[in-house]
Figure 1 (cartoon, rainbow, N blue to C red):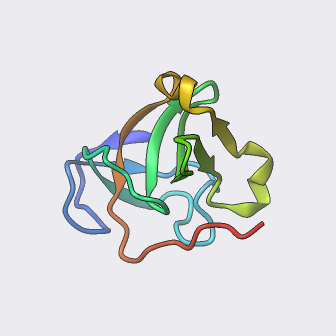
Figure 2: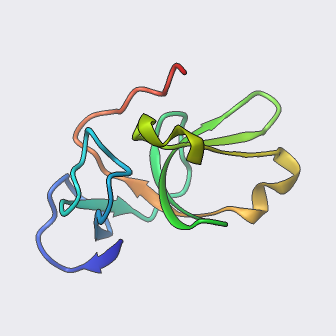
Figure 3: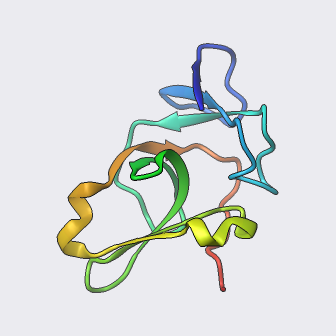
Amino acid sequence: MTASKKPLIYGPGDYSLTVTDGSLLPWVRPGERVTVSRRTDLRDGDVGVFHSREGMVFRQYCRDSQGNVYLFAVNRRERDRDLSVPAARFGEIVCYGRLCLARRIPLPTD
């Protein structure tokens, strides 16, 4: 991901990023820009930009009733890169914002 000041593709936001890999396939292709809102109050199913042990990643957010957080790879071919964060360790993950996508991406069922 690289920061960009070029026109935004997916609607209003605070900044844009260029997707450099297949992590958002099939909804967003490599080379496309996505806009990101600095809002970090994510709802289940929102796609965010996170810093984790893998570095900066796009992941789909989901929180269970006990406060555990799951960060799903949007491209389900990369499901082995899903992250689960126990509630007690949620501070180890930093969210830099929510992608402003034209439509919601369904949460994975696998």
